[in-house]
Length: 152
Image 1 (cartoon, rainbow, N blue to C red):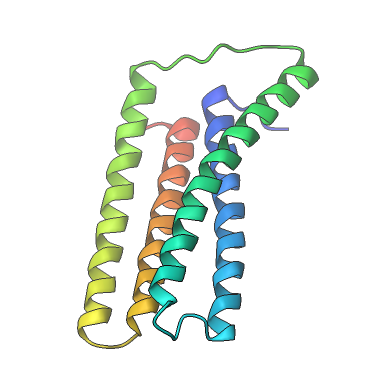
Image 2 (image 1 turned 90 degrees about the horizontal axis):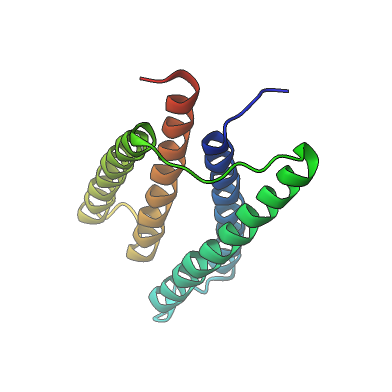
């Protein structure tokens, strides 16, 4: 088994939680799309409500999973590590946030280009923006995990 620091475990749990939450959201939205619920005038409202449910649910699920993982890890290893962040952690957070902003900005520009060229329906463009938010977060977590594993 690979030894992981507390920060690496935290990023790993965040990554897994994000993947699960977006998988559930994607499955949920695919059902609405297949049922034709996004085609009518209420499609935008449905996407907006679903997005806020994703954000709110994601926060709650993330907190619960982090707490449970910390408890389980402490029980198994019989060790408690206090939460400490130093300058290196802050640097990794900043680098990760730069990547997240870059990826999301690129995705937003692609989404606006798709909208301007009339390639997708506007409702699907909103979903594309949400997808790029997800991708940016995953890439940011992977970069942070890489930085903790290998360093700069």
